[in-house]
Image 1 (cartoon, helix red, strand yellow):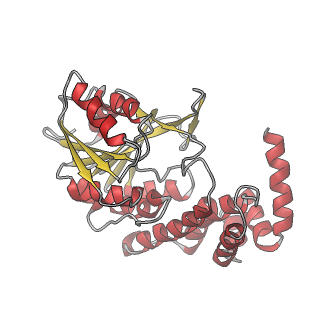
Image 2: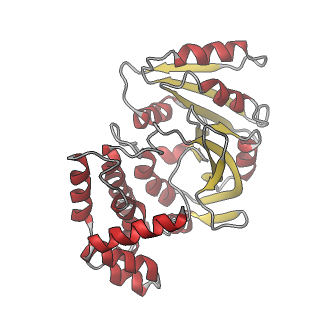
Length: 335
């Protein structure tokens, strides 16, 4: 950790009146208070449910009476706009986004700061998913059995392979890395759009193999329910690839780009059914995904010895009905 460092913890406020106190409590319990200059940045995205009042009352009652700053949007603009506002309003060395229906381990910020040496630009942790009934299962980056240290391009390769996630909430990021990067306003899955550009700009990326960030898996939340806006996942995956390509020294091969496109968007979209997305949105999303398919994909994946992905891509491209049958059978087998 740098001798003197400052961190902005950016927390969005929108329809979380019944959840935000627990989030704030986990932030105030961070063991990093006193290790660094920490600023709480609350961003009101025109929440109609009193989330702002609940958050401010909680912070004003807290024994530590932490200083915080409240920034208000004039209209509801979505999480991507909140991220952009946080970046614009922050003047600290590092930025950490914490969503206001999630909680964090008390040691999370301290451990991330300890790994944030002078040549490190991103520190990530693992994530655990929590349901309202208290059950939890670890998600993302499950292939690692120890801490990792990569160059930015190596971390990008891990993301392309599906082992490193595109969340921003489980990452402490050097603020300067966000220069020239804008989250796509009005879009969901906004973190996907920017993660590629962040990784190619990063000098080093550290990964802590502990599930220190806990996100709440709510049925009504974007990340846990399927909506007509699932098409944003495809759009933002393509934006992610464009962000990578904008840095010529880190350009991906066509094979790598195609692998990421299929893993991150086309296969998840293919697994949808009309029972979870009403027509005509279902047809529109499927049509958009078909237009993005690459007929050369199975060959790319086969050459890379990714036999399963090659088989799925072949079915998806040439026999979608057979793909659907295989998916339904495998889904039943997992139940």
